[in-house]
Length: 159
Image 1 (cartoon, helix red, strand yellow):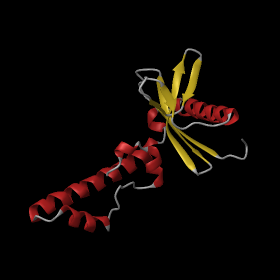
Image 2 (spheres, helix red, strand yellow):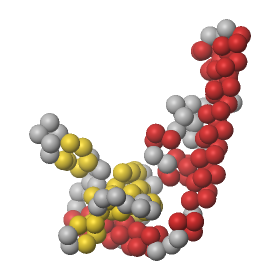
Image 3 (cartoon, one colour):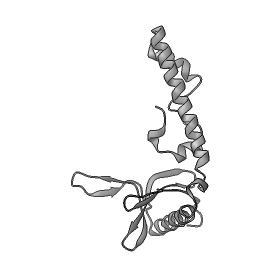
Image 4 (cartoon, helix red, strand yellow):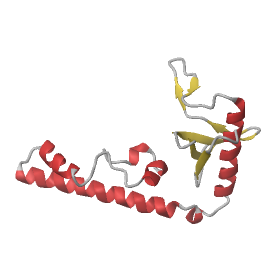
C-alpha cells in the first residue's frame, strides 16, 4: 500500500444524533474520489462505513469499496486517525472558514443567476438566451474551486 497516495478529509458532526460521528472523503492517487464515507460508533468502537445503497429487500450494499483487505485496513486507519485529529479541535479551528468563504462564492453566483432570471422576465427574454450569455461569465454547474467541490456535498452546487 506504500505505493498508493491516499488523501483523507474528515468532517465531524458537531452534535451527532445517532451512531454516525463524521463524514469523510478519500481520494486515491488523485485518480478517484470516494465521498459519503461515514465514521460510525459501534459496539466495539469506531469503524468506517463505505457509501451504501439499499436494495428492494432492504439489504445494504457498498457502492464503492477497497478490493483488498490491506487497502481497506489502510483507508480505515487513515480515516479514523484523521477523525481523531480533527474531532479533537474546536469547530472553529477545523479549517472550515475557507469552506465557508467558498460557500459564500456559490451563494453569490446563485444570486447572479436569480438576478438574470428576474431581468429576463422583465424584458421577456427567453431563458436559453439569458443563460447562454450568463454562461460566458459563469459556467454551470458552478463550483468556485476544486477545493470547494471536494468540501461540499453535491446538493450545495448551483445547477
